[in-house]
Image (cartoon, rainbow, N blue to C red; front, side):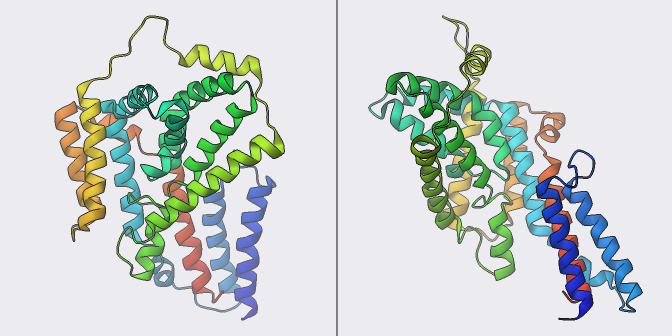
Length: 313
């Protein structure tokens, strides 16, 4: 490897480590901005060394498929949220707890829901279902008379959500590997989902038996007061919410089973259009579902990768 390529790798890993360690304050210079600035820096270094820096090499490494799929996935999330689909999911979980599956079985489903219904970013379901995770974990802690059970369930849910964008067909991280390797969409989804569920279980057991993380009782009670409905009140979930939720599940299932030649983005936009018409979802609601952080992270990653290729790293 040439000295220029080595410098490029050192700059890249230096920025990543500095961002992770907090040496580069993220509230001042997010890692995405730091990577893009690093790309400009590498271009200047290449010119100093007399090596031509080709923009073609940089742009050749920007893969539009996962980016557009990610954006389409966020539009779906915005439509589902506006239609009440996530509220419908919580209501279904509450009813599930009263079946023979019981509270314990429902908690297992809840903790793994982000991976089972993988969205393009774990934040989507994490934010939507956290009140349910808090409530169910509190009930389980009361039954078991062990406060650590609450931490176990909540952090298991968070770990599951954090990894859930990997197997997502809606522009998840796994689609990058599948696209670059020429594999059919969803080829590695099942493997990833099983692995994430196993990791989630290990995390929960570690919290309960090794670290024994006990939640702050006053914070827990304050959060429960916020999330719990007043006694005797019933939260009405619109029929459109159930329709949107089950339509989403059926759409994803059909994509996995039949693997249509239509791009996933086209299917998702069609789904969004149907939900907008039936549930009267506005454009503002759709845009509200778009989270810029992961989109910019993916784009900046492609740009720095192209820059490293351009200088021979």
